[in-house]
Image (cartoon, rainbow, N blue to C red; front, side):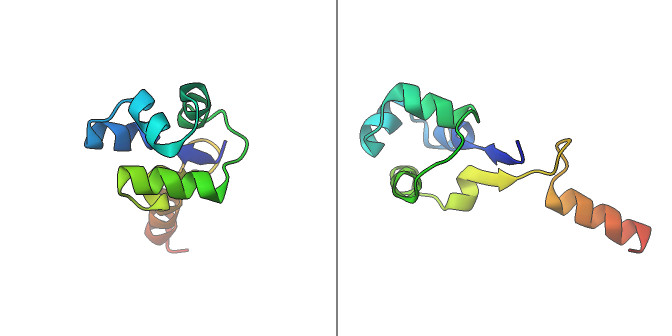
Length: 85
């Protein structure tokens, strides 16, 4: 999927467990695991806002876009610059 979820990175930075985050956000640990593992098809803005508040971060700290094959927009842009595109 082109959208990668980095909740685990922020959990590690904040030294917080999945259960603690789920309690703070008001969702079940199972639903948070689905989101954290990239299996969710969607996320409500209210949930995203609650995650950002609990983790004291921005949405971009939790979500990033990847091109098919794992290539990020920054990597593609750097490759285009190097190729003179």
